[in-house]
Length: 142
Image (tube, rainbow, N blue to C red; front, side, top):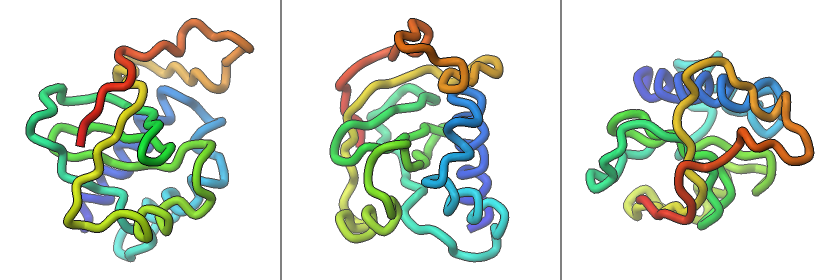
């Protein structure tokens, strides 16, 4: 369990570097912050998935559009699922109610490279920010 929470924390930090405070301080991320702080307890479920071996890219962030609006962060052999600013209000309960542990979840959405520096794109976003461009669009993984 500790290694999974460690992966959650890594994904949280990666998303902070990419999106900034606007994302990580959003109330939808409160359960994630609580899980990181209380790493010995099971605060949230269904945030850690084994990556499909057919996905060859080691690291990315995906803003998913289907089957649920979320962020999927690829860490080598795992996928960490984080709530996005839109989507189900009780995100992890929604995942538990709609997806089983046995069934793989095939996500589709917009893929972004991991940040190489502190970009904080949402904090500096203007009406049309050219710097938030996906590396790929509508590609599925699961």
